Image (cartoon, rainbow, N blue to C red; front, side):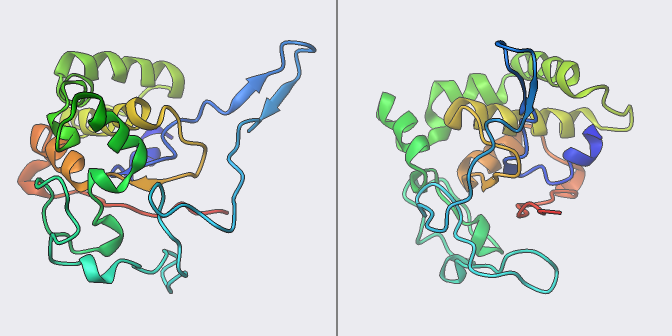
Length: 201
């Protein structure tokens, strides 16, 4: 189960499965009590617009003008991407911008909170133990760099957005994602999944 949930590691969502809530008043379990409501009009600054679904079940790439360039980057740290839906700067998200404004930094990766939350090995180790406690054992076949990378993505989401609901995913800012990948790389830069929209089966 845990290994399957790590398959789309570069997305910020489906990361917190603590949606099962016990009603203290009568002890009745209320599953998905805090499930986000899907709205027809979404704020593009904080989420991905979903223009349509392709043949493979994923949403079509809606930011075609951002592919292969960094004209969309405002922090000066982002790199060109092969997919438009992944071409998002930390300045594209208002909650990330608010974190940047706290210390007046140009990029979220320059914030000391990012380093301690997403790059510190000991913090990631503790977060991994917490994840195992909540989700169950992780297979021994999972390389440590992949686990730390996944936990770093979770920590970034928790730090910035506090919590995203079940099946509510956002592509991570390229600058933050690349910094995490550099700290916890896959062998030969192979094995990065990239952002995927959730399935609603």
